[in-house]
Length: 283
Length: 299
Image 1 (spheres, each protein chain N blue to C red):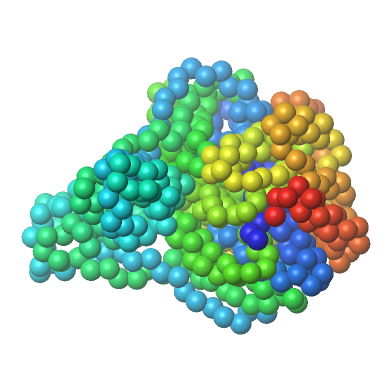
Image 2 (image 1 turned 30 degrees about the horizontal axis):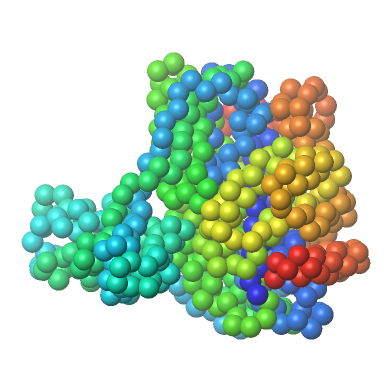
């Protein structure tokens, strides 16, 4: 069972819900894997404090041109959709930062066999254990533009059984979509503010386009949730939980602690959230 | 002309609320919303759109079911897990291959390896961009379609237009509201910018992600200033951010308290400084005053 925790807007509480849900379910004897797919700004480790037992570097294949074999025909540059390889007069230039690693130039179009692929490190994956929770995170190298290949690599660590909780990056573009693509349920976290509601609508459009089951959690409820409720009601999206605005939760978060450790009700809310997912037959 | 980009690494630290304030405080500028896949600045600035244009960022493959022989070459070569064997039936086959648009990066490899010319690669409209007028001056913004690709290219387009408008009208400054993270759209928003204003939230997550942002700024050689937001949420973390910045020669240009009136302003479609004066508004004005001084010394 794969639960992706996402939101259009940043800072609505994805990580707080994802980490507390993972820890709560693990403590209730469910096998749980937490996967931090927000590889540009991974924060789950701050709360779960995992003991890292395995590290690997993730690479993508990028082209390297053999200047001797190359006849400067320009086929590679004509094929590349990303301008990652261009033939300018007497030189072939490669721009590994722009390369998506599709393999087209080296495997398909170079008539001279002058291009080979070399690995380029784009980030690291760390695996470990946080109490009873299995932990996986990706960490994008600084300066690397494309996060999706690293997210794909994180997802290769999805467990075959048990509960997987995927903590998604904010937004509605490629990195978010790559995270949620094969989820059984996308839990959209929102806050009851104009920005929160606006970006929730965008996130709903995105999950609907992907054809995925989805539900909403309202975080920091206390004012403005009437608008969110009205929207969800009209759109036919269940609101599974409303977490009240509480400065103690924010302070606990600021210290990098799990909310279930300082606010006992939080664990009850997480259990109730999981029950609601089951009840709605969402997972 | 100078270009200031407001960023944070972590989402939800208050970038857009701060940019809305800078919009009210700064003179002679163009605003650019570079968070194209969750743009919110328009909710406060209520732009009157003068010009809109489609954004074609990249291409997407599609398989013609009637021509597909289910040889599977496309599936074997695709490195983006974007080919699925669940396409519609044709005269010969019960199912064919299909491109999952959510995974396709438009590289064209599948179309190249398909021996029966069953795959087409076509440009897709993946968003829209706008030139608008607001109560605080001109604004360029955009909307990437849900699940859209090439947010970086759209950000570059927004910045290019914003700079062009600044030049046409003889304005001195572009203020850009950036995306969270440190990937593609953020890189597109900082390349060649004059100065980054990092909004750090006084939480361990906020500090962690600010450090990643500062790393990115150093990588591209762009000077960075920091303002600490929600500073009273955790005084210890706020002090640690301050110390971390000072140790690296990054100026801290102010601290803004955790204030519910930012939400109140949002609800009213205003920036906090337009709500009236108070301690928080004064803190924001101070951040702008010091940022302005720093901008004068930038390229």
